[in-house]
Image (cartoon, rainbow, N blue to C red; front, side, top):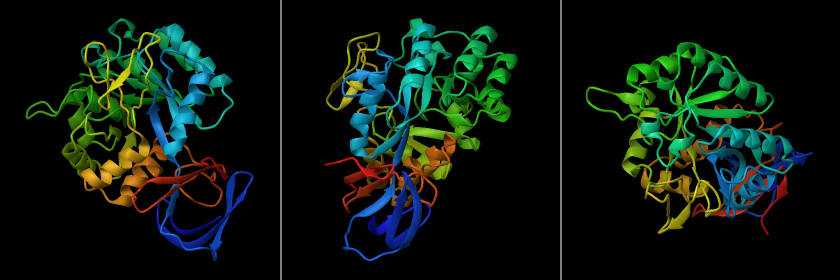
Length: 356
């Protein structure tokens, strides 16, 4: 595969031939091909996405819902994703885990359980009836059931005892702070204990005020990775720009994307480019990852290279995906071809072109 220009995630390369063997990059060498203004970047990684093609995973914990998510979002450059479950009862959580285990299709790199251990006053569009208090027994069962599954869990740290939080932090589950009314001190305590991630910065969390810094302040004060929804609805583009300046190198993109689905407890319909629930509360997004990148560059003055990293290199580091996120020998051959207008031209998944 010849590319006139490649942004590997770390540097620009020109006029290179990429060799692929068994779905992995086996070599990058000087090449001679047809010059193009298009350029190649690593495939995008989305660590918070709820469904696609009209099937919401929170309503249908099935392999079909996972496949539908890939079917919709690979078209805009997302080659890897964590299928995400809204705050749900235990039965739905266990079904989600089984669906993950049974899925044999492309793209899936993790399960994101958003809840149920929230502070109910910061639940956002999640069902209050499904919010649960943690217990040692429940946490032990969750840890046991998710063995062998890359699991990402959004929690409100103020709802946990010290023993419960220590149990989670010491497990393989990747914990993230969110849907929380934690004080700055409570948030920093959780970060100091080893919770190194924060879910959708600014949204559904205690805000940064003059005498109470909250979870937003803890994000800016700490080295914790923070995800952000760059759609201009979940946070103003000036807030995105500020977050980039303060969190440079530790801020990554998620779409938080849902889909039109009214068939279960989570009823989402898009209207005027936004999703809300029956109460009118902003509920997920209609964002794609390429749109998030475009918004970073065009609306928040973030350099192109950094915007690409926020969708590739950084989420790979956050989720411990060592074979994705950059274009390097030995890694999976997952690429996106972009034109000068930052539109997706072609997507390669393990070396195979996906778009007609």
